[in-house]
Image (cartoon, rainbow, N blue to C red; front, side, top):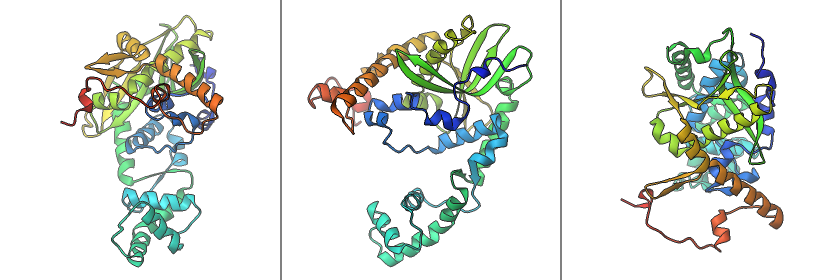
Length: 344
């Protein structure tokens, strides 16, 4: 069918979306503990799960662009520390032939400090050279191993063929638009926000809009859901989508409850669909308390964001510390400990 809702996208490319300055879920979830994230000065590093999820998403939604975004390594990946050292050297414009700088970077991160300089340098060159060469070849692409590529393809195949999820990745439906990576601008509480939905199903017959996000990882979904604050993502995306569609010609459509499609990489027999019902959506917007622990919601976090922005402008601060520390002159009152605070 003709592209109707898809044509409303604010951003035409992922790069355009990422370069745009609006508030997003990633900033909001980190801001509570690291408010300096709103300054854009903290370097972000994708986890293996995030990279795998991006691979699966690309295979399913934009397979022709996979080689543009990823480079499959032929060499064996070195340890995480050696990778970080090599990446740092490249960022600083050095090569592995720059002996002094290689040793200095190793010492800086206390890597094998009990080794002599000559032994350490030879080890880094031997272990890191293939990875260094792969980075030079890949340029801006993300490096992945052949094992990661094989796993991503297995997961993509599972999602595309399983009876519970295949409909979300199909095309050619009569009255349904299946939109991948729907990128849009909206407002929540007067603040400019941006969102990118992995999948959006727009049913023009039923007049419904179904937002979905794809999650991949080896950890239990419920653990990751709270650890990475995915409830904020679901609530923010749905709320932003409500405002977006209300300001379009589709304002009589209903936005459905947010869904996460999850694949556990340790159990590749089936996917699972998790739905944030309306009650949970309200909790994620307003915040809630459970077992003595406070979970901040979207509305309070956006109020905090406004406060930090005002504070930054008034003071010219180049680094931000948590709001409650500033307001209480560095004092935090100790109450009954939360379960997570106990050392046993």
